[in-house]
Image 1: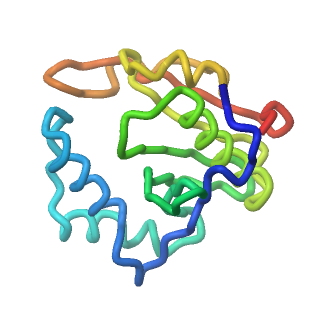
Image 2: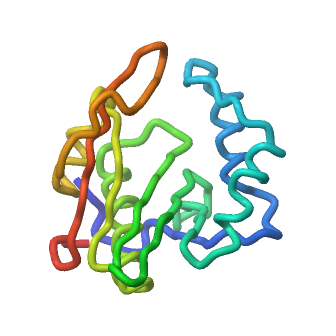
Image 3: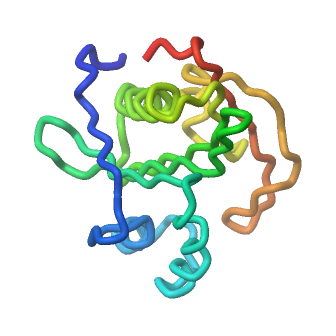
Length: 172
């Protein structure tokens, strides 16, 4: 069950000067939870790979906070923003095992940000086929297809599921 308070989750846009980046967030997850797949980029690799992307207007990083205590619970990234066709892609990473309602709240907050602040008409996301959160994602977005054998994780190649939400479909 999701929360009734729309301000339960806060998205705070990350800027170049912030001391937290997606890189440090991912490194923190790996250090805290070594059973996750190994992240091979160094900080320099990450900065080199994403510096051009971050310079454009088609990429946004957000710190995801619980409003009640301002505790960081994750990172949300909106990328490949196409203003001409009014669509973009999202990725959400939460730092803790979360209840179903919290993940749904975060996804809805990010999706609604895309519609309300970026004027997008479609939001797309990808999920490995064997991801344990598949049933939760099914409650927020529509499965639009499969990219066969497109994701390598834990020594195994998997299909990627493509999810999409159109403006007006989100009950956020």
